[in-house]
Length: 173
Image (cartoon, rainbow, N blue to C red; front, side, top):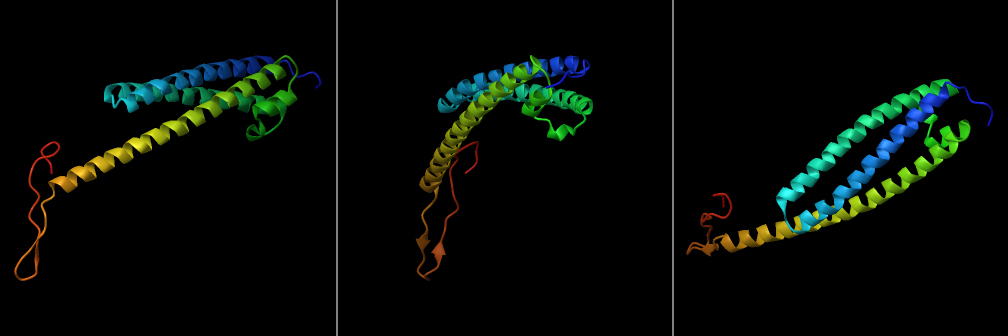
């Protein structure tokens, strides 16, 4: 690669700093997943709510960083004479000199691995949520069938369905 414009260096450093912050937030997000899973398995609603709030806060911070990153990439694209959409970290690394190129490749590799791990853990969490939801549905169906009054045939052949009685949950049948 030839000599890159010197005005790129501050933007590249800013991009690398944003990527480092994103990495830290993704690691924090990963750290919330185990407590969330444990809370779900233990049906601990308070801990589950706390973990969800932590995740929401982290995702909000990630969204703010992403906005900043897009702005920096827009500036880099302008300096490099290309469209911002065409600039992935790999493409930026190909267009800039060392040591920035190597640092960008490393940051990209680390983020890819983290995102892959998060996606896999998220898939597992989804399976646990779906399984728990299925168990709850079966329990409610069982409770409903136990509390439902039996239907009775009348002498005329019509079916009499008595009104459901009893209180199950929150004064509702």
